[in-house]
Image (tube, rainbow, N blue to C red; front, side, top):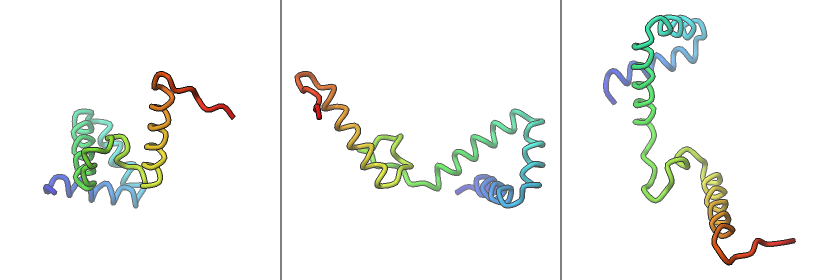
Length: 93
């Protein structure tokens, strides 16, 4: 992790722990929109570097789900594909 990313992560953690520092930081960033945008981009990159990349066979939107959530989403996708395929009648209770 680069020095800039480390500094941003540490400031974010400090701001999360101390509401007054968070308010001051937000007020300062609100006065400088370009700086605010760059800090947001750097923070997003820093967070992305902390999480491992999802496997290539896994959809990107499932990257932050729990294993149970991933199983549920997979089952829903399979069922949806089954219902949308031609010639397969839906189950009727």
